[in-house]
Image (cartoon, rainbow, N blue to C red; front, side, top):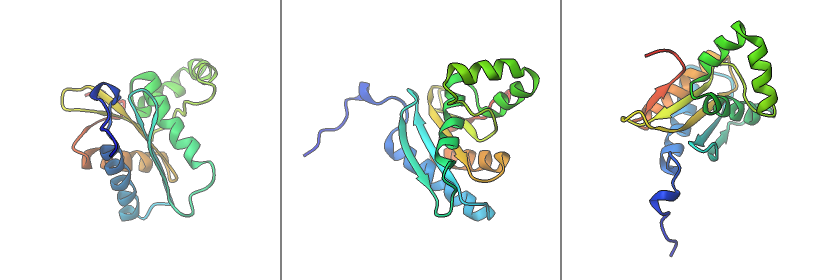
Length: 155
């Protein structure tokens, strides 16, 4: 019989939370009639917890979704703010791209996940449709898990 993970070994989101987020995010995309999506959920340490790619999603969607989630974690705010900074300070965005090996994608669709005490649990990235629609699905997934969203907008 497998042993449960030691509480210290859980870095943020549980697998059950990640699966709830991914399923609800994809359901939102279907309800909105969006193009096929890919959703990636990372824990607070940037490690993969869940990834789901809908049938018909193009081949680079997992990497883009991961880049959105990773970018949010790397900067400590959702990629809506990262996108704004990319517009206003492109030199910084270029440096960020270099520092992360191209892993940070500075467009909406990467949302931090927090608990009710504002503790960072991880991030969700979605790619497949227009970035604001991707972000809308991230939010729906996170809220379905009973957690708080951080899109990068001031509270």
